[in-house]
Image 1 (cartoon, rainbow, N blue to C red):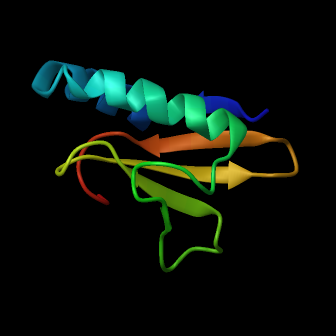
Image 2: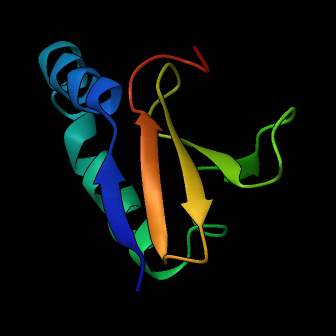
Length: 88
C-alpha cells in the first residue's frame, strides 16, 4: 500500500477546493483511496503528464480541477502536488 503525502501547496489547494467546490471533496477522497492501492490506474482519467520522467500523473476531480501527484515506487509513496486548478 502506498503512503499519501501532501506538499504544502497541495494543502493550500485542498482548502481552496473545499471552499469553492465542497461537493468535490467526496470525489477527491475516493481518488486518494484508489491511489493507496494502484496509483497508475483507476478512475478520474489517469494520465501521465508530459515533460516529466513518467512518474507524475493527473486524475480528474471535476471538469475544472485535477489531482496531480508523483509516484515514488522505491519508498512506496505518492506525493500530492496539486488538488486545485488545471495543471498550474
